[in-house]
Image (tube, rainbow, N blue to C red):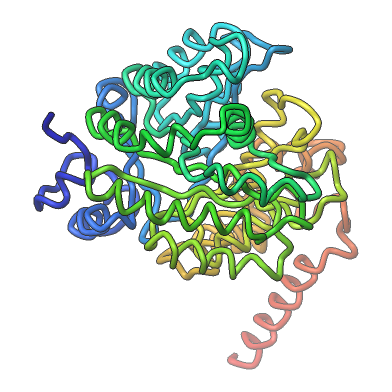
Length: 441
């Protein structure tokens, strides 16, 4: 079957409309987009079926701005289409670049179809979740069933799929002595299947068949980190690194078939190990785009993990990660609601933006400088407009001020008129200008 992927077009020297759109959004030449896609350092997740709908193409990789992903999806406890569409709206409205539907409850097809139809951003999924839902027991999974489910998601229009192809039977024992064991849902399911049957991971043995599905529909493969660390104690251990080496092998096999690939990264890493993790991924996986969950830099803050992980996300983005998967304050505790999606997206927009500034992306700091000028000028409306969350900024500014006069005054409720340093500086400037004017006369 003829390849339809962005990578195959790029390798033939073609600049597709999707590449031109990415170039426009990133402010870079379309030729650069084409060349980076051709070598695998940039991916454009754009399933041919979603392209026929509302998808607005974007890119993930070294020459692009750092992107963020928001996870949504139902569970066996909470499940309805309207709720997931509300989460999708919040995620896209507040700036998520991609969204993953991680539904594991009822009506998975209906929810995923509604999300794809409504979404202008790429949608990712983890097909093994639905495959497990459709068999009585995990051990009843088959290679054919897993492949059929990957193809089912591809035909429905999913732009990228997480497939845990790199966790091998011989790796499982490396993870059993960990503090938190195997924390990836997909990784743990496959580890259980391998332990039960005494066979190799079917997603690894059938990887060529997965490539054929991905190539036909131009689905980007997000090679999952089934042995990612779920605690600081397990970070950068033998299990994680053994899987990463396999992901490097699979990356080259995918590129040989013109299939786009990104590599998923660890979830819990102490700050002093973050840079080394990026360097290892870039070296072992040949600079394929790196997509990381967090990472969380401490394990002691349940209920605040949107903060513990945003710290790590800013750092790993600075060191070279290409997309950051958000973590909400509900992480480890429950399924996030729409408001928690909003908080998680904003936390990660801050992290990604800070990383772009640190990486000295062209014009990355322009918005910061414009907001700072508006702040010094007490142009509150312009400050709000430039904020990542204008509604929240206005709400917090206005809640302690009694009337409209004070809401536009040259001070806020923290300092008041007498102690506002910026107001005082403006007064000093006016006095200096007045003295200079008198001296000139």
